[in-house]
Amino acid sequence: EIVMTQSPATLSVSPGERATLSCRASQSVSSNLAWYQQKPGQAPRLLIYGASTRATGIPARFSGSGSGTDFTLTISSLQSEDFAVYYCHQYNNWPPWTFGQGTKVEIK
Amino acid sequence: QVQLVQSGAEVKKPGSSVKVSCKASGGTFSSYAINWVRQAPGQGLEWMGGIIPIFGTPNYAQRFQGRVTITADESTSTAYMELSSLRSEDTAVYYCANGYCSTTTCRNWFDPWGQGTLVTVSS
Image (cartoon, rainbow over all chains, first blue to last red):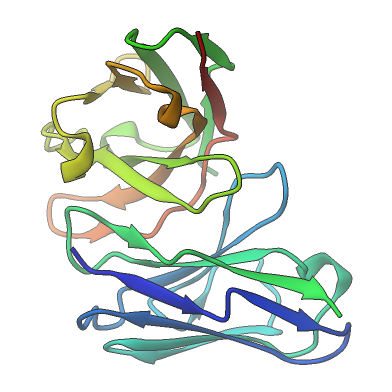
């Protein structure tokens, strides 16, 4: 099973600042990596797939990078609606598909 | 635009079973790859298993093998997840989430997700 490790667990950021979230896989997942955003009481929403491709309707301030074992989600200028929990998800090797434990982005 | 609508919240006794449904619309059901993901209170996301209707055979996470059954009914475009031998630790929100598969390729990221079904296991 591929273990996904996200860091940090919590990120405190002021509105308008940049946020950088990391996700590391225990073995290579190539570019088969997605990022999701989840707000309280809501289902996760797809942000990024293929490590760097924004999903339909996702603002350009969200960007993904990386391949192999190390990945980054960057939010260039945090808006109020971006404070949420973010999960990475590898879909290279299954079963099982696996998720990171999440990074909570909170208001500083 | 694919939409997934799940059945309502359930309260179950320990040792019983629960069956959650996920009705799909807006696409071709046979091209779906329906996955089930659960989230315990205050916790992260955990993949339980999935089914691709055009292939028919479900796949399960090892830790749920023997307790979970995932099926799909193409006639109603509905997928089901049944979890048996329930215990308090199974209290969670259960989501279905869609991928896409043809006979030659699959897209295994999850989009969209159902709204979630809260299953509470309590005596």
